[in-house]
Amino acid sequence: MAMKSAKPLKTAFFHDERCLWHSTAGLFSLFLPVGRWVQPPAGAGLADSPESKRRILSLLQVSSLGAKLDFLSAPMATEEDLLRVHPQSYLDEFKALSDANGAD
Image (tube, rainbow, N blue to C red; front, side, top):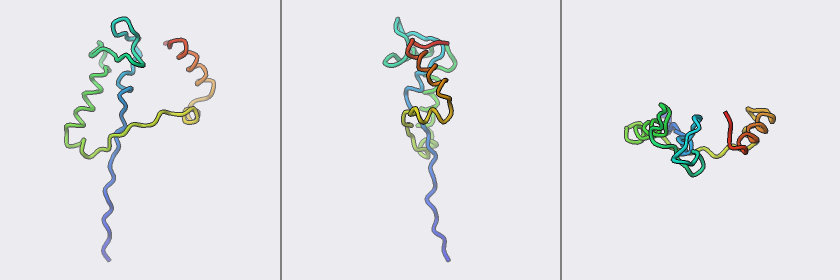
């Protein structure tokens, strides 16, 4: 009896441009704080800059590995999603700090 060959599974690579903009260094672009509509400056003096992360994405896309990946973007996490791994008190404090323009 001949076995049907299963279609090979693809590996997904989840990417969102906003992840490249993440900064914990309190960066500014000219006089505006980084975030929302303001992208961090290129090579902002950090090893973990948007350009270093974008370089990895570019290398995947131009290599033969890129053709074997499904490039996807994950949906925004809901509060229900966050509550699976964080207590409500943590989310409340995080929101209060974020509403006050962030904190260390």
